[in-house]
Length: 562
Figure 1 (cartoon, helix red, strand yellow):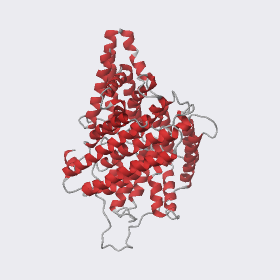
Figure 2: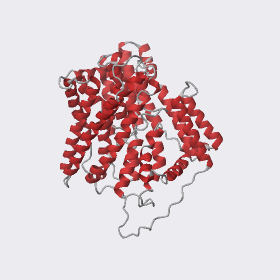
Figure 3: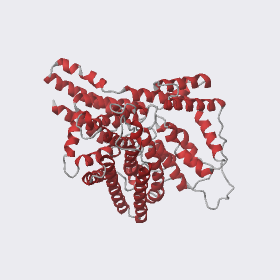
Figure 4: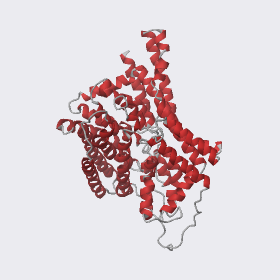
């Protein structure tokens, strides 16, 4: 029976890689359902031959028992509420408020900063919801959009940074967010983990990572791919006062009312002012109130609901349940534990690779692999392999989760980043370098540092070993950003017209940054243990290599060979 887990795990990994490389031209959800069925059939045959008919019949029940329903129902509730907001033109009301915000003392720049971070502020269960609503508004800031307030490069940075923030905001979301999968497992030790133990580290890392993404797009991506964005700048000979007339953005009273109900529902779900209640109840109640008082039509409501995250999470949990029932997770855990026995890697190096797993294999929705891999990470703790203590597991979980939730952005399999690329009229793959770099080198280590120095004072059940230390967070953040930006500036100066040479420079940049990220993770987990830090650095370099080789040299080749 021990071979069964390795067989089902191999089937899962091979099919995911082939799907990512577009050798299997089916939706990821379809592939996962088929993989689940194949694993069940193989598992049933193995069990029938070794343990008899009754054991084989019980296998589907074990698979279903491995599915965690709370994140799925919370996601459905969140999408229902967001769909009701969209159906009653609540997003139009938000656009009007943004227009008024531009006329305040914070001006255009301050307004743009708020817009870029609006997804993580709202923290909806899927970033595609707010991206679909606001990306057309961002496009209007450029010359072709009519306002002419931003140049082509500025608009690329704005759209790219906003989309980066959106395709990561599902992680800290309290309404069915991806992070709740990890919080559910951490609840075995931290009694209040469900209150959001992973929320702050993800939000902090995402805000900083969004800023670094904007910088990467500005000084590297625009130089690497100068001809691959079809946006147009304002012609030099055009009169300054000549502008395209834009229709005034208006919103009905029901739009403002639905926006108020939406915000109130979020606040109640997050802060629980009326006592502890299921978040699903709050979200569904908010959606029903919007339908009743704002008279939303069922057809409009259904049009506003995006089903991809739901099907992705459900299929991911199916695959996870099938792997758990057939011993696939045990096999993966044994393999990774064996990898940690390699002297040059150790546990620290293995964790540095594992944390970056979903950026190495970016799928259309982060929930797919998160549902499958979080149980494996959980087994590294006291629950089975005892490679990590509970606080160490929480640190690694924070780093893994932000890396996972941002992985849908650069995915070529219908990832959320394609929405931004389409809006900026860029070739597919334009944002991949910027998005994968910040997930790997900025967000993962910052989330680990934040968890180590900030969150344990709130969520640890006893007197924590790590105490709150804002100064330490500031120092680590400045050092990580300083090193990345410094190397980014050097990389920008080295860019030439030679695509191959540019790609090699970028790969070296990724390798060094990945090593620093792995070393930082080891530092957060093991403190000043030189051997573990060195092992983390090596693991980070290996992960960066697997990520960096997937960055396209030129986008024109990608277009012709797709």
